[in-house]
Amino acid sequence: MEVNLAAVDEYAPDTDDRPLGGYAALMGLYGVSVAAGAVGLRRRNRPLPDVRLADVVLAGVATHKLARRVTKDSVTSPLRAPFTRFESVSGPAELQERVRGQGLRKAVGELVSCPFCISQWVATGFVFGFLTAPRATRWTASVFTSLALADFLQFAYAWAEQRAEG
Image 1 (cartoon, rainbow, N blue to C red):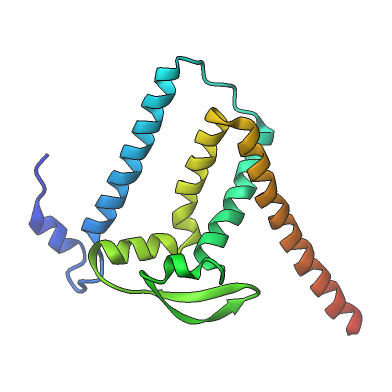
Image 2: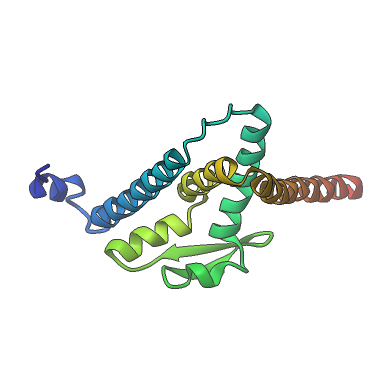
């Protein structure tokens, strides 16, 4: 496959802010990881299990919570620090950070600071977990799902308190 470099340059001509090469590297890493996982599963020669709605819901809520933990939590900020710069506290136990660097560093920064972006990676991890270690994965996912539900209850409690105080 030949890449037309002029077309890449024309993608965002008014900015040098789009790290297309970094995005391509991350897509390649994701694709290679998924392919390696699929080959590993194929070599086990076991049929794929049916997808259960309960597992989809469990993984979906757990993916939401784990993605937010990785991308916004104060405690996980050391993981993001090489790729982001602290700006402010943006909400209860969440930080607002600005991506820094260029190329691959910037692309990784966008990945590790965006819950929407990293959710694909987290969800894929849960799916492979359900296929290789279903009990441990359900246990792990239930921890993050419980945390997500607890967060919603904390917000609901705070809202109810504010309403009661008038």
